[in-house]
Image (cartoon, rainbow, N blue to C red; front, side, top):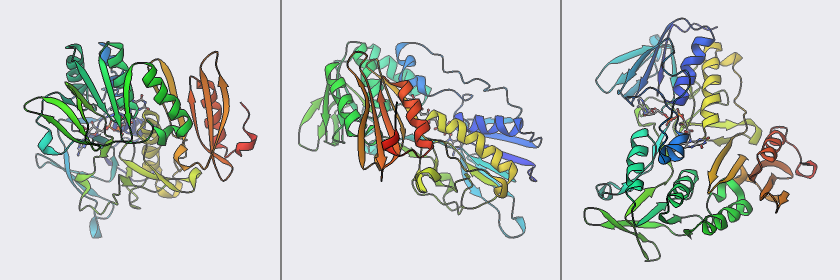
Length: 402
Ligand SMILES: Cc1cc2nc3c(=O)[nH]c(=O)nc-3n(C[C@H](O)[C@H](O)[C@H](O)COP(=O)(O)OP(=O)(O)OC[C@H]3O[C@@H](n4cnc5c(N)ncnc54)[C@H](O)[C@@H]3O)c2cc1C
């Protein structure tokens, strides 16, 4: 173990919680402070676009509240000094009320926030984003009020799940996506084509390959203007436009930020031996994919990466391990299980490796230069698990057998 006595974790959600838990599990006995901009203890976000919208409020994260640490809730870190010269090895996080927190070990776990429409459109009523429990409860109330026409902008997993839930509630839904097929980057063209048909078969009006240029309405949103000139009527809009990593508080700190905090493969920020980062805020070079910088937006990455980041912080850079987990995610859209693993967008070759009419399953293997780099499955969890292991083993696509 290194010489850390005062550890600070900034961000008190999944990654922050796992980092704090791991520091203690690994025997760290010094001061431990977790700073969280939210007023709640850590909670689980995946149910926010699923069961919460259907009335189930269980978002508990096991172990939240049981960590032996000081939680500072409802406060935001606004500045970081990493320490240089005589103070090398120590640093200070400054909070929005001016409180300085000095540390000799720091975990950056500030995640991401939804990308929003330009400020001039924000005041319109009836426009929702979905990231926090407050967002989910507000959206649920609006969906339960029975809006005439729900427009979901963005066909990613949050948009797809919201569209699916709104259809289950019997609402008219239009899904607008800028890509030619929903989730094509994460699923590849074949599986994304299946998903597009699935949305349509379940009553979603899918408009692909167009961008929204404006939200229209007086006080409340009444329509969505597209870049081809069309106006889509809307009484409720859900913007699933992707996320922006929460890195502004690192401006001027010297930490490298480019679409997220860029770390080493072992999750150290800008080569600093006492600062690690984990979760949705991180872009790390993935050794399996030739050092490609990857930013995950997946529960399992935040969970597992935070644990490794905490262990690496205690061990120090010389004994640290790289984070090499194969990214994967899972979503349910109109009762179909849609999953992906690896980095499908890197692929130059697609092979259908399983397809069954009887149970509606599909498995697609995706390769670059003959080696498996990604996979996508529909109703094929067992296939995805096998393909994920094959990606980790750098299996030639010609040898994939399911
Ligand atoms: C609606 C929804 C559904 C999802 N469904 C799935 C799913 O089905 N499967 C899946 O794998 N993943 C899913 N995810 C993604 C998963 O929840 C995230 O990957 C995970 O929450 C990332 O955790 P994190 O701790 O890195 O970041 P976050 O959860 O974003 O937490 C970061 C925390 O840091 C706080 N913070 C930010 N800036 C500061 C600051 N300056 N000072 C102090 N605190 C700060 C934030 O308020 C927040 O509490 C879903 C996400 C959403 C929003």
